[in-house]
Every structure is written in structure tokens, then in C-alpha cells.
Image (tube, rainbow, N blue to C red; front, side, top):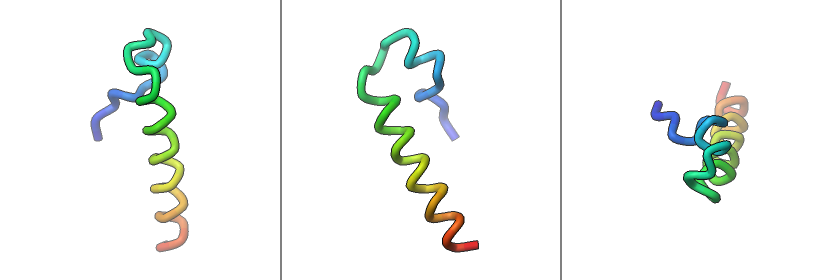
Length: 37
């Protein structure tokens, strides 16, 4: 996994929308994993 969306990157403000986008995607992926298991 690449962690370009880490909290540190968000603090730096390098990508204003990337953090939120990745977090949403991560949550969606977790939900999918829970469903599958």
C-alpha cells in the first residue's frame, strides 16, 4: 500500500482533497472486507 494520504501529508496541506478522498475510499474498502468475511 502507498501511504500518500497519511495524516502527516494532510497536515502539510500538500493535497487538500486527497486525504478525505483516500479516507472515504479506505472506509468503503473496510466495509467491503467486513461483508466478505
